[in-house]
Image (cartoon, rainbow, N blue to C red):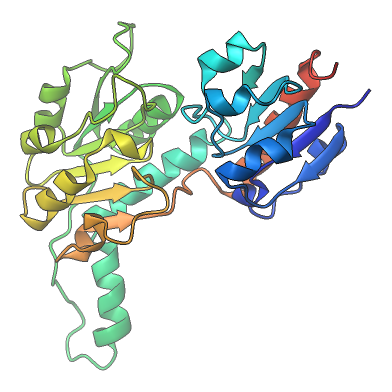
Length: 313
């Protein structure tokens, strides 16, 4: 018997072709689901697909038919994994689908900030036409080659960023957030040392008890005033108010964020009130979302459903 499959936030995969998933059961799709709609929409489901819809203990306790939660992403911090295990509900995520896309976003952000891309694009569109001078040097630019790149969290994406940064002429070091010592091709430094050493710091760690609030005012003060901070991991890792203050006060040269403590950003976020907005690159948690990566993600979800033998009773 084919399982009942419910996708609760299909909008999160854009215009992806979901036919491979639809073919696996009695499929129902919702563009977006509020918390107060989860139980009703999943009441008959054996399989629930969620990108960011939260499944906490109270919700899981009211879904006796549910056997499998497929996370349409890698991070699973919105699922109560302990409660799911207690109820015999399997939780499967998608691993590796966005490694290249997030790596490209990370490297691209560093280059954009170093080359002052936002400023010079605006200058050309608004002032360059008809100018008497061929060149304009309103903002100092830097090259990535020869920089020190510090990585927080050397998992799949961290490894990929390290390889590309090294290929572009950077010296690479990392700090571990797991507490597990491994043999790696790059030196491992304590966090404080890494922050003081690096010209670029990029974050590629999961959000958990070790990493929540990891980069706050104290840690930002350890960084060079000329350094860049890039977070493509989870918003709760960085204190956004402290980061905004460091950027506004010139204690940090620039930052790029694809993730935020609250998504979407709150209207009064300090990140939206910077005096010098060119210091900060923002994107709406979409570093993972090129068409090619989403195609792989859909295949991962379908494979997870196919491989789970106990999804139907």
